[in-house]
Length: 259
Image 1: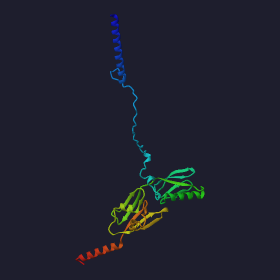
Image 2 (image 1 turned 45 degrees about the vertical axis):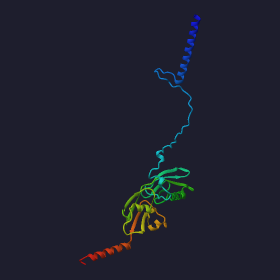
Image 3 (image 1 turned 90 degrees about the vertical axis):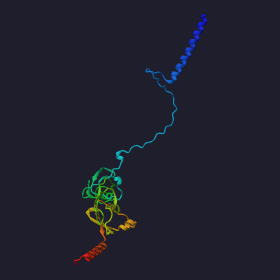
Image 4 (image 1 turned 180 degrees about the vertical axis):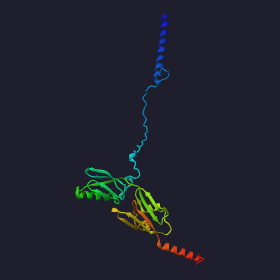
């Protein structure tokens, strides 16, 4: 009898051990119990899936953005004008590097050679002029460079037979056709073959040129560049104006009862 009771107890302990083993295995698979009763997730190796990560271009820094009035808008035909800021440099002479601003008289002041007229010149022409002045007395075959850092807002005047004559501020480079478009078109009896452009050349010399706008529009003549402080005058057709005045006078005389 004792033997039978012992065997039953042994079998009962074995069954309990098996149950406990299964319970612990299940608990290990789900996670260990936390003090608050929750089950902590166990770390299982998870196969990695390739994930497409969008490539975002870095935002441009403020210094990478070209503001209006900087050299990004200046072409090789740009003419230097008063208040332009330029970086002057001579290759191989680092002490010469400096920023210079064109004064109201169209001059810049540089070491050794003093004041030089540069208004109305292209950058390339100004570089050649300065190189020649330094080569005269001071340097052997100087390599001069000018870099326009800031250019001023240009102002041009449009007068004569146009819809809206006046002074117009413009930035960057401008041509005759674009300048005339600012004035809103032509008034009656405008002579498109007599477009006058007046400007101050190098050294303050007054220059004058006449353009036939019909030829410019048709491509027979290139569209000329307009510089800061240019004055554009659209002439009236003298013959058409005289004919109008004559007809108007005839009508007045015909209707005048006191004639």
